[in-house]
Image (tube, rainbow, N blue to C red; front, top):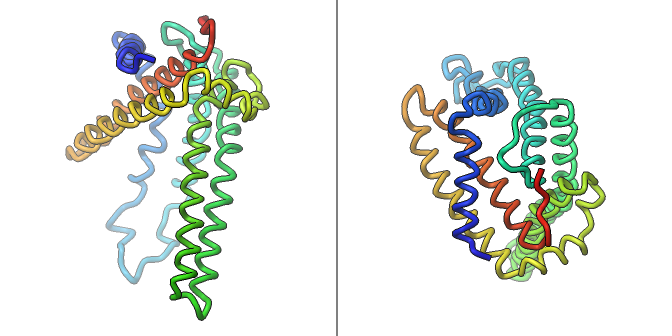
Length: 260
């Protein structure tokens, strides 16, 4: 797999998706707006960070409204990502909103199913840690070693699940079936056709790109007054780029990519 070519193709796809397509860009910004506004409902003058802090000072109504709106709109955004995963070229428009919402809802349900074992495992590790710290032998090297071993296992478990999730989501997008997105053996076989080494390198490449993006966006966010706006405007770029990159990686394991 030519990773540099995949990066270049994903950049071209992203440019085509947004350059001159201002309505599409604005829709992306609107879909991300509720979560971006969430920090602004906390007024430092009315909610002091001190020993006098009270949860009654939090504007729960505004917070709930933004969170609910953000979750609902995120389903539409996820539905758009599903269309990219299907290999549609050039980048699709926002249309057939009902289907977008349903596809996005399914994509998030599938993601939750994959992540759920990790959450259960983490809660188990935390519970074990709390239990061990409450025992008389909490400071013994043996218990510390056991705790570290469990944490190491949890990390390995997390990495394994993280490797499968991207291909599972695209498999769902291509088949339209959540069940197909859970077929561990089929997903493993698909990754094997890509090549485990090539696949892992591709994920590392994407991670590096996203780290660079994160640094740039963090710098932009520090600009007074308009920093959060710049971050909101830039976020769609990395969203589409990552979705297209994952799609190109997935298609390395297929004979005939799906193109709409």
